[in-house]
Length: 176
Image (tube, rainbow, N blue to C red; front, side, top):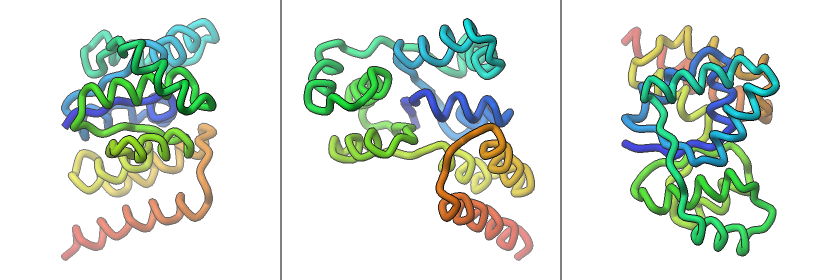
């Protein structure tokens, strides 16, 4: 399955030393140019380690940068002007590559993606699926969740606890 990712999943999975989970869960990861500029170009200018990790994944071929059609991006921004350029490019690219998953954490961007009938997921989904499919152990997945929060990933406490509980239940399944 192909996924089009926005900045937040890339940044925080890299900060949590779990960027590799993207390519484990998805066969192909695409990002639009605006996301590349935000994560890699701006991140390297600021000396962010996560930017180096994302750049290395691009150079390795785990993540591919692709240009979104500007007409589609402009249409999306005209309809929903509060979206950031990167989010609009993610949505335009996902519409072009449909069927695919869209990785977004922003509430409004996720709502727009659902309105466009795109299958949208977030950073936590990647960690949960990676644990479910055995790409990481339950113990490592729980550590990734903790590292996400420790690195500044903003998430409601209820959602964090729900994600931990879903992963812990996998451990119970391993025992049976």
